[in-house]
Length: 145
Image 1 (cartoon, rainbow, N blue to C red):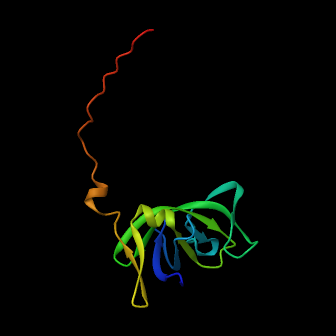
Image 2: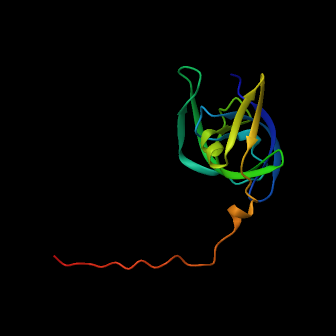
Image 3: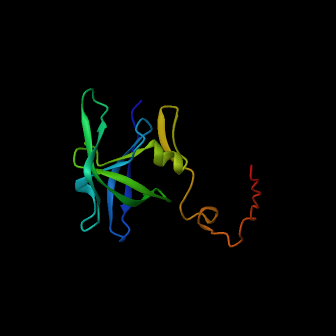
């Protein structure tokens, strides 16, 4: 099955945005952005030692030199998360299973058509509301032996 590719918008914490072609790949846990697609001036949190991943092609490796927090706009939905940054990635961006699970993103194929469905949006009040009530206090009874 061919992996779906969508045009999405990525936005950094300083609100710099660029469009990218993202491959939605449930076979990869991590989400990775090719380094040349990082918006100009965005801060990449560099790793002291690059993180090395096995790539899909037999015997190949992919190195991630850092991470960057991003907001992904997929259609009319917005999701956020940290993604690895790699100079070696052949695609512009890879959205992996970790981010897909966190935001309930599904790849659905029906009648030869594949679509990406985003179940949650970071602007959803159920996800953004912070409760002001405190949880009940637990009382612990310690017994000396």
